[in-house]
Length: 124
Image (tube, rainbow, N blue to C red; front, side, top):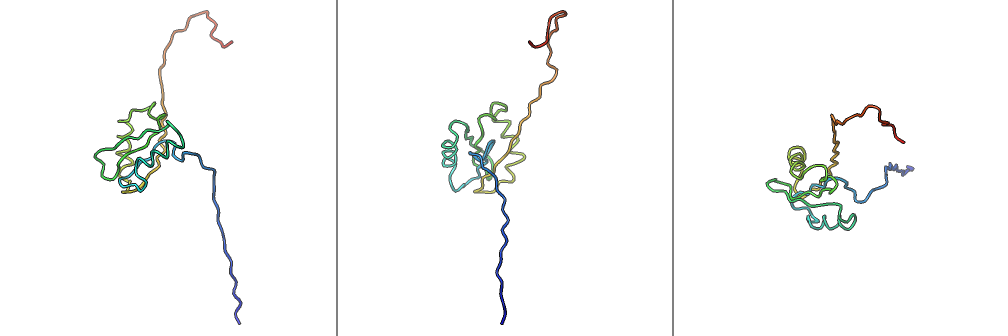
């Protein structure tokens, strides 16, 4: 007689999600199952007036992007599309949605002003 033993192992990894799960850009491949308008509508329900859809022309597998309006206060649409076209779009498959974290750091240098001798410049 043979004795059998059954066991299992579970590995868990979890974290709190943020809604919407995309904060910067979602690239929508052509033939996305939910449809570009369906995806945009779900974004509008979760976070009204925070995202905008931009149609993409001339890309083989990309139909549109959904982009945070706050990102568009930093860069023009054309600048964002140029960067995505070179570095992200070539990796998008038909029917796929790609989340893109798009961190922008803006630097200002050589800001000049005048100092007036004898004036108190310390904060109150």
